[in-house]
Image 1: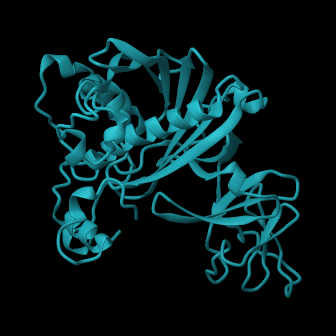
Image 2: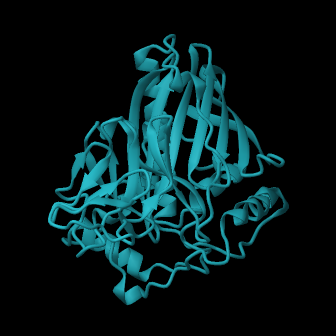
Image 3: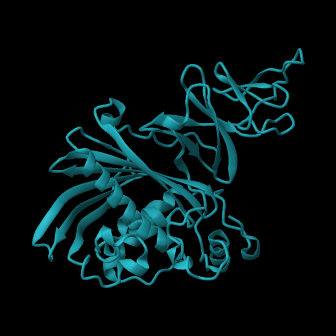
Amino acid sequence: MTEVGWGCLTGEGRAPLTEKIREVQRLRRTGNLPPIYPNGWFAAVESRQLARGQVVPVQMFGESMAVFRGEDGVAHVTDAYCPHIGANLAVGGVVKGNCIECPFHGWLFRGSDGACVHIPYSAKVPKTARVKRWESCELNGFVFVWHDAEGRSPLWVLPEVPEVADGSWSFRGRTVHHVLAHIQEMPENGADLAHLGHLHVPSIFKGSDLRHVFANSLLLDFAKHSWNGEWQVRSTPESHIADLRVTHAFALFGGKFKLFTMTVRAEQIGPGVVHLHFNTGLGSGVLVQTVTPMEALRQRVVHQFYSSKSFIAPYAKFVLLSEARHFERDIMIWNNKQYMSQPLLVSEDRLILRFRRWYNQFYSENSPKFTFKKENMEW
């Protein structure tokens, strides 16, 4: 749980913030929601968090998983629970070679296919003894897992960011946020260009709490952001990718003095990965954004920032701070809004409907629906 996006609750009563959040979630209208887990690639862990021989417990898609790195350096993802008697492989499990050993009875499972290869007290290993293995890949600073409700193999390959892969761009920092909303709400913002011209105009120095962002301030209202952008979908075989191109300026005194201008090219790659490419007068960089559905209506969002060496450290930190502040304004909206399956739109909002038609490709016949009852919702 995080305080970001819940500033509106901090002054109400003496109850703990987590209790207040649960109450808001219980009472909030969810709307007619799309399926809760789209098909695609999603980040399980950050590469830097998974050392050779290490096991990490992960919660994704309402499932518990064990992510481990074998002695050969390759990352593997399996179901967390041993098929023998149900011990959690990620809690006390040990990596041996490229296998993971159950902490309860020592059963050994191979990472490449999930098969049990050794039972210390049995001369024979049953052919059916295996733990579910999740298709995974590692690139751009993350270990990704493929999720598909129909059990299909990956329908596309995630692209590398060349400058991250070859080390020519340096890692400059990261942010982590939790969002209590449907996963589709986040990428929909890319096609909702009108919200940029309102929610993201006030200076980042006014923070992310919307009660203060729109309050008049003689000291802070002299600086504002401006945005111009376009959103479009790629054609086959890259129809799983949508592009947002934005020109962003931060200016003083009504735009008379621009502190900086940058162009941003955001690639939405499936439902859970975004590459935000920056070009500025001081150099280039990329924010790798991953959105992972931990459970229904709970998303974990990570931004990793890489940039060229010409990006001086203070400027890199400012870019990361600016992105975080803008994103946290969105979080306060998402955490408290209702999903509208039939929104009331004007002609200038037409890209939102185009986005929804595009995003619908990530749902399939067996994609799980939201079925929790309000009175039983726990986070």
